[in-house]
Length: 128
Image (cartoon, rainbow, N blue to C red):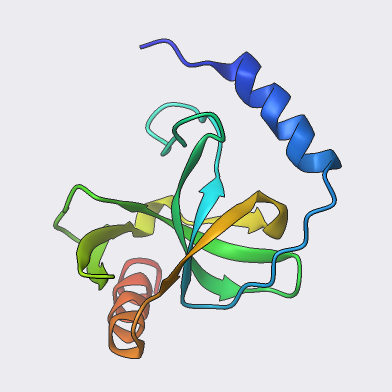
């Protein structure tokens, strides 16, 4: 499989130079430009190299710990499932990374407090 690093590099430069300020909060799910990555790291798709990401922990106005999502349901210690707008998704706990708010594109909604509690428990079990 060939990855389009050159197009991602061009898009990344645009993201860096665009004055974009998104107001976001822990527990929200956003479409996020995560890019083209290495090996088994989750890539973004489409022109914006985007995928849904859960804002797991906000570190201030500019950065957060994000957990990529998958519409393919997965099981095991590295995953936690939840519903967003009647669609089931898996959180990829092992793919946690610090991201800039500049990568955020569109807010998709918020996970419930109950689901967020379960996701945090699964995260703590994996990294605790």
